[in-house]
Length: 244
Image (cartoon, rainbow, N blue to C red; front, side, top):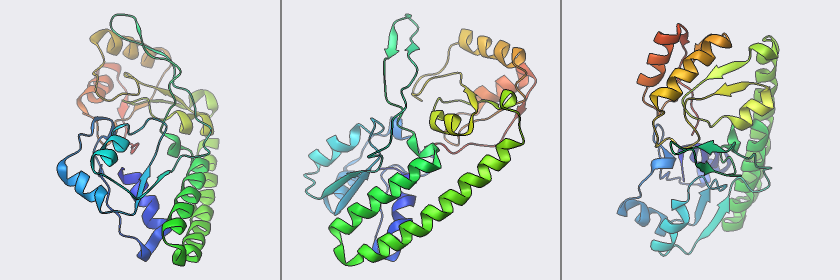
């Protein structure tokens, strides 16, 4: 369904698979609008890999409209979902309530589950490649474990009280919990709404009060907001974060 899953399928499948991603790099899966070409691509495939957890509600609708008859796998199967914090709209009515956070791949431990699910699904549609898929998965899990250990060592040098990040989209809950980092965002999980001037002003006060030293923007977000935050609050604008 989107580029990160595409990367994982290529790692597991190597030369035995041909991968098409519907939502490519630097595109927003939350705001994706399928085209007729996407329906044709799905109709011709043997396996549809989706994240699940409400991340791409358009995927099943697209598969149905395309008359898709192949297999479908939820890559996040078995992940213990985190619950999104309830948010308030401009009318002070709740916009989200007990909503699962779909961004589970932000924890490398969850990616281990993802690649195992992908390997099992590929083995189902291509039994002859089962040994290849298993070997690739085992090798990649070792890479993920090495990456996780490296990241923990980097963060260990920073006191927990100082592990505070400002970014533009509340999509780092799994990462934050795993590495004990606080992410503070000017908008909620949906990228289709701009924060109000009041919310931005409150955030600037929060940056100054909590002595935040850097703000970050996502690769697919409008950088103007965080540029304004860094200017008004006097903090450094960090490099792009790759979230979806």
